Image 1 (cartoon, rainbow, N blue to C red):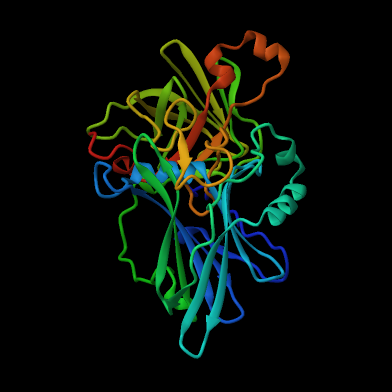
Image 2 (cartoon, rainbow, N blue to C red):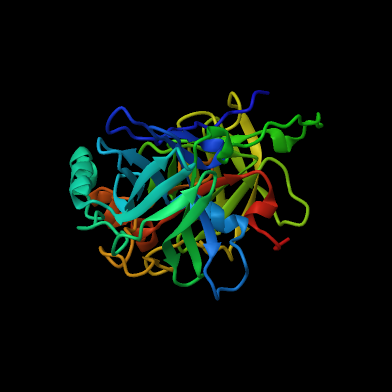
Length: 377
């Protein structure tokens, strides 16, 4: 059976002939300079004083499911770093000036607030975002320019962008500079030993999804990047998270209550009928298959929004004090997509339950249960 491979989307945007190159399997974005390279990588870490020393894998998945990082270069060789949602609404942005000093093998670096004029040009390119009520008047950014610094070849520095006030987990941008492309975060080439084939090597995949609860649309309904893995999951606000597997998992209370029918997952839980549809077959070339479902009642998104646990900018950046309520998947990895609140028609709104009209939806994938529920089996 052929595995259904998840779609990998490039999120590098071009403003002139300078371009940003992304490789999704490395969670980095690379910008070539006139002399040298700049690489960006978004990470989740715990703030000083927060419980624990580092963010767990589920927290990283939440980060990847909420923000879509982009790198843009203008004709003045200014690098614009932006975090946006799938509708083009801006979450955070800043500018980076980099001057390579080949003679000393160093880079002269200055971090600045996002240029308002450039911000307006970007808004003009995205009509749907400009008309969205979720679009803030100003983008969250740094309050002032940082002092100029010299960075040695191959060194990196970090920038705190956003913090979850409830969990203490920060969204941090790590920036690495080098004159040699091979000194960046490229995954090393290794000779892997042969392994036995198991069902964990079979991928489930969902893309351009729609999520229905009791025949009411609560999430999706627009083009989105796909998610794929041995395990799929979705989360509906006020309902909890559901994890899907082709087999039961030792130590976890999976129930065989779901069915895969070509491009649809369906099941009934607690009197509610759930349908999760994809634009392509979910398993290989299709077919009808039994599916094991785990209800994760205790799941709380590490990077939630609104009343759950609002993210806020670090250091009181200018712009709105809270993030837009619509966030989406990071396109640098194959985990997660965000949609909602989804706007239904007038007839649907009159018949929908309150949680359906306002529900936020997260979807994602993983290869191991330990990545989704660390220490909980």
